[in-house]
Amino acid sequence: MIKILEGTDMDNSQERSYEESTFNISKRERKANEPTPAFIGISWLALLLGVGAYLLGLWNATMMMNEKGYYLIVLLYGLFSAVSVQKTVRDRDEGIPTTSIYYGLSWFSVIVSSSLLTYGLWNAELLRSEKGFYGMAFTLSMFAAVAVQKNVRDLKSSEDDE
Image (tube, rainbow, N blue to C red; front, side):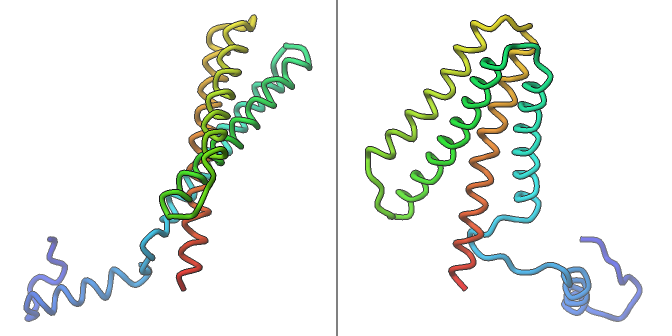
């Protein structure tokens, strides 16, 4: 611990009390499941960067429109399925009833969307760097969609606890 008030007549408890009252003014108490503003911000930033990079790549690609449409739908399908998996897993963890069919379809959709992207990129006449770019942007977007959905749910849960 760094002593800020060296040379004063304060004892350790007074010194700690002064430090706590001085440096924790802007810090507010968070609820149990409430995410930090930093995590919320970085989750949204990751989602925007992933989706933005993927869409920018599609915009600048020299492929035909039907190929661009294929990759766009794969991204949208992947994002929806990732959010669905996060929701059903969280529902089950919290004891909210979910059907096994929807749970299974959510996981199946994640696998299908990832497989469709892999198959499309494998057979595409693109440079390997372009294929890697689309794969990484897709993966970042999927992860970020799950993180954003978790944050939305955690914030709603903490509001409901008030």
